[in-house]
Length: 333
Ligand code: HEM
Ligand SMILES: *[C@@H]1O[C@H](CO)[C@@H](O)[C@H](O)[C@H]1NC(C)=O
Ligand SMILES: *[C@@H]1O[C@H](CO)[C@@H](O)[C@H](O)[C@H]1NC(C)=O
Ligand SMILES: *[C@@H]1O[C@H](CO)[C@@H](O)[C@H](O)[C@H]1NC(C)=O
Ligand SMILES: *[C@@H]1O[C@H](CO)[C@@H](O)[C@H](O)[C@H]1NC(C)=O
Ligand SMILES: *[C@@H]1O[C@H](CO)[C@@H](O)[C@H](O)[C@H]1NC(C)=O
Ligand SMILES: *[C@@H]1O[C@H](CO)[C@@H](O)[C@H](O)[C@H]1NC(C)=O
Image (tube, rainbow, N blue to C red; front, top):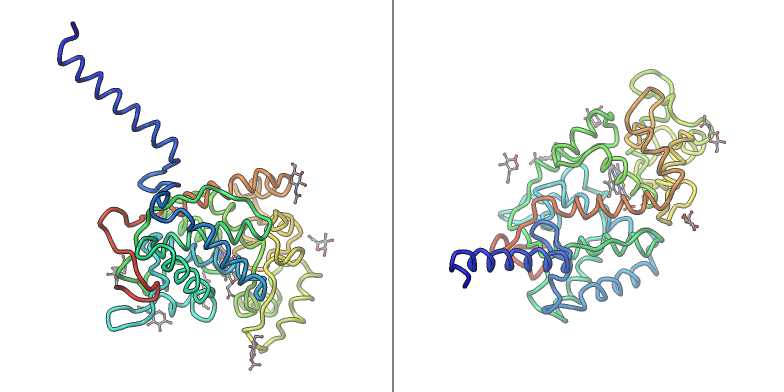
């Protein structure tokens, strides 16, 4: 006969094994899981995809904009849809923070997705999860990788404009600044180089880089790291004292496609933002070999991109009874 204590420990061992196996099956990382809405809103990914496909018909840039929304959400208070909250009596909106105002876009498409999701499964799916799904689908529909989106985030009841003002990476940040802003979120150098590959599609305004074109850092000359042929193109698009809201393609070669050309652009000194070219400086840096690796092998970039996106998507999610499921992504319930 088995003693009761050894049968108890067997039961515990079996329960632990079952837990491990079920976690592997559901593909969960941390507190989130891939099949979170399996019983409550199994069509959510299809609904998001249909809405993005509709938006793409009139706006080839929207996939890029949705990816950026998720990034700017996750870096401030974690992936909690804080970026979607409008100004109100209790909210100083992150939308009006320096890195976001007149720049981050796609809010109306998120509203449309949320309405469609609410019609199918009322009160179930968070705005934070919609952002995570929209980022993956936006990338994939542009020819990029797919990855297993982890779900189960809840929505914040707060936003933090000052944090967005001061801690988002800026286009004029040095490599040291970029690394430290990423490591503050437990994102490493590999994540920095990999996720910067998001600048393989979408646009930037002249005002985000025109300081490189004429009198860079008071030198009276353009940024010497900028390819001279590319410089001329950019000077035509963004004349000195011109309209800072004019848009340039972040990737001059394949502007709407998600591919690995971002990295070969850097090798040709055609990084649009200073923060892009910082990853491939003329001096030694640990980022150079990562750029060279990705420029040779689209599969390794695509695989890493999915992994780093899952890692970013895991930044401080609200789970369990934290936060709420917003009914309207723009306001707390
Ligand atoms: C590494 C630090 C980063 C900096 C300094 C940076 C900065 C910028 C800037 C300045 C723009 C153009 C904004 C404008 O002029 O209106 C931009 C656009 C964009 N960024 Fe980043 N970014 C960074 C990382 C990322 C990451 C990690 C992602 C996503 C994973 C991302 C995705 C995008 C996309 C897709 C666009 C184009 C958006 C559109 O066309 O609407 N960026 N970024
Ligand atoms: C924003 O974040 C900062 C730094 O974590 C904190 O000191 C401040 O209280 C927060 N503000 C709001 C409005 O939550
Ligand atoms: C964020 O920056 C903007 C623009 O400089 C400024 O108007 C706003 O007051 C700042 N917000 C906070 C909370 O510091
Ligand atoms: C980047 O530009 C902003 C706005 O012009 C400026 O306030 C900031 O000091 C600059 N940062 C760096 C690192 O040069
Ligand atoms: C500046 O450019 C933007 C984007 O092309 C355009 O919407 C806006 O009307 C322009 N502003 C002026 C003053 O020309
Ligand atoms: C500048 O870009 C052109 C392509 O437009 C390329 O042929 C050339 O090698 C680049 N120059 C440098 C120094 O990277
Ligand atoms: C990516 O690599 C695979 C094989 O390694 C190749 O079949 C495919 O055409 C490549 N795609 C691009 C866009 O270069």
